[in-house]
Length: 368
Image (cartoon, rainbow, N blue to C red; front, side):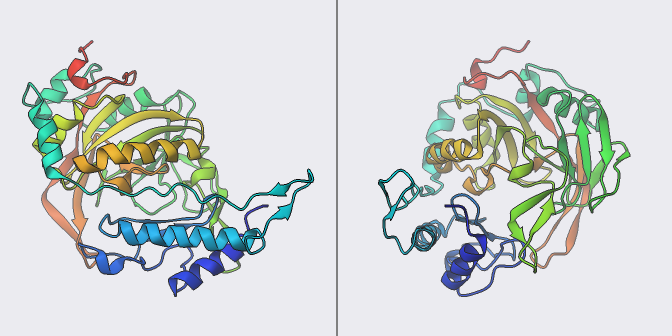
C-alpha cells in the first residue's frame, strides 16, 4: 500500500501529544533527558518511507528508539488494516509489516578514543594534515578564499553536477555551484531566474554546502506539508538528491588532538578534512550508495563503530550540510538566538584533499 501521509501525521501527533509544525518539528519525546539546552529544531519526524523521529541530542537515544518503535508499530497496523493479514493480488496472505531494525547510538567513550589515538605513530596536527594532503589547493600565507572553495568543490563533483551553497542554514539554498559553469545566486522562491555571482566569501554564522549533489530545481517535499496539507516546494530534500555519495563525520565532544589521530587511522575513503570555524573538524567520507535506504543501512553500521570515538551520530544523515572550506565565519548564535561575533573572523580551513581516496588509513596515504 502507498504511504498515507495525513494518517501518519495524525498518528504521530497523537503519540507525541502535540502538533508537528510545518517542517515536521516538535518537542522531543526524550527532552527531559537532554544534557544540553535544546532548541525548537532539535527534534523532527520524517513520515515518508520508514517513519522516523530524529533528534540533535544523543542523550535521549533510548527514548527516541522507543518512540520510533511505537510510531512504526502504530502506522504499520493502521496502514495494513489493524495488523490483520490481507489477501494479496496473487492469492497468498500478505505478512504483517516487519518493524525496521532498531539501531541504538552507542555513547561517546573517551577511553575508546584515547586507546585508538595512542596507536598513532605520529603527532597529527592541522599543519601535518596540510603537508600530507595528496592534492594541493590554493592557500596564500595560511589564508584561503574563493579560489580554495571552488577548487574544493570542483575536485569532489562532476563538471555538470550541482551543489547547493548556504549562507543561511535553514534556507533552501542561497547559491548554486557547478564545476563547469561556476556559481549563481539563487532566489528564495520558485520562478525567479538565478543570477551569475561569485561564491560568498563568508557569512555571519559561516557558509555551508549540501554534501550530496542535487537537481537544483524546486520539487515537492512530501515530508514538509503546508497548512493545506499539500507538500511544500524545496531544493534541499531527498527527492532533489542525484547521488548518495558522501557522509560527514564531525565531533563536538572529542578533543581535537585525539580526534585527528583517530581520523588518520580510519580505514574509510576520507576525501577531505576541514575546520568548521568553531570547535569541530569535519571529515568527508565517500560512500557511493545507490539509494537513501542503502545510505541509512551503511550509516547505521558505521555509527556502532564511530559513535564511541566521539563522532556525532546526529550529523551522519543522508541529506546533510557541512562547512564550506575557504570561507569565513563571523560568529555564532547564543542560546537565545542572538549572534555573538568573534573578535576576528574565523576561517573554515581546508586541511586535506584526496578526491580519489581509497578505503585505507590516511597514515598509509602517500602525497602525490
